Image 1 (cartoon, one colour):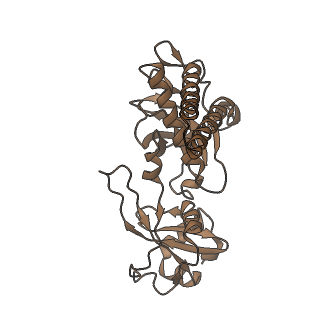
Image 2 (cartoon, rainbow, N blue to C red; image 1 turned 90 degrees about the vertical axis):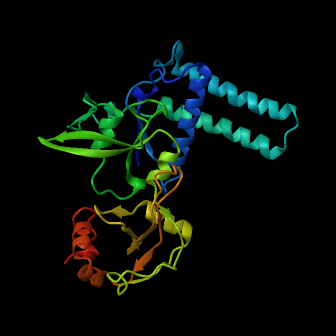
Image 3 (cartoon, rainbow, N blue to C red; image 1 turned 90 degrees about the horizontal axis):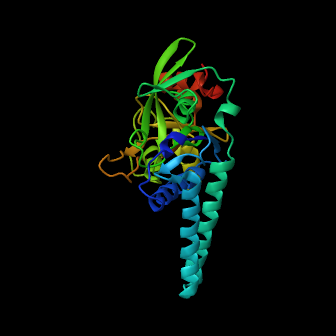
Length: 303
C-alpha cells in the first residue's frame, strides 16, 4: 500500500489549537487502521513539508502536534493522580506511543517529489493541477483493477477540508496523451477505511450460484487468514464477486450483503470458496479468466 499525506488538506482547517490537535488525532487513528491491513506496513510519503503550514489562524502544524502531545500527557498524569486502574494507565501510555509513531511518520516520511521524480504524468482535480500533490500521485498508482485494498494507493487527508472530505475523489489522469478519470481512495476519517475494505464473513449458508458450483470447494482458511486473502482480492468491473490468488490456489469471494450508504460504519460482506479445478473455472468463467490472465497474470487460467 502507498499512502500519500495530503499537505493541502492541513491548511486552515482548525478553529483553534485544541481543534487542530483533535483533527490530528483523527488522522492518527485513520493511519493506524491503514497499517492494520495486509502483512506489510504501508509506504508513507509526504507530498510537501508540513510543519510550517497554518492549521488555524496563528497555529502551525508543529504547534498543533505539541498541543496533542500535551493533551495525551495530561490525560496520563490525571489517571495516575486519581489512582486509575493499571489497564487504563497502560492504554493512555499506548496512546502516547501512537502519537510518537504518527509524529515520526508525518515528519520523517520521504517526500514524494524526491522519490517519484522520474514518473511522467499529469493530473487534475477540480480544475487544479495536482500532478505533484497527493491526489496526483495516488491517481498515478491507482489502476482500474488492482489487487485489493492492501495494494492500493491512498490519499491521507485531514478530516474537515471541504475539497478532501469524501472517501473517493475523481482525478483526471493524463499520460502519453491518454486521458482518463480515476477514482482515488481518500481517507479523511477512519470510517472511510470501512467503506472501502471488504469484510470476510464465515458463512456457508448461501447457495452456490450455478456458474461456480461445479469447480469450487468449501473455504479451507481460518477467518483471519481468509480476511487477509480478501484484502488482496481483485475486483473486476461489474462483478459482485472478487478473486484472489494465495499460496498457489484461487479463491472466489461472493458478496452476500451490500454496504448501506445511510450507515457510514457498515461494510460489504463476502463469504468465500476455494477453486478446486482452475481448468473448469477457465471454461465456465471465460471473460473473468481472460481478465485475470491479462492484468494480474494468473498463469493457471491461461487458455
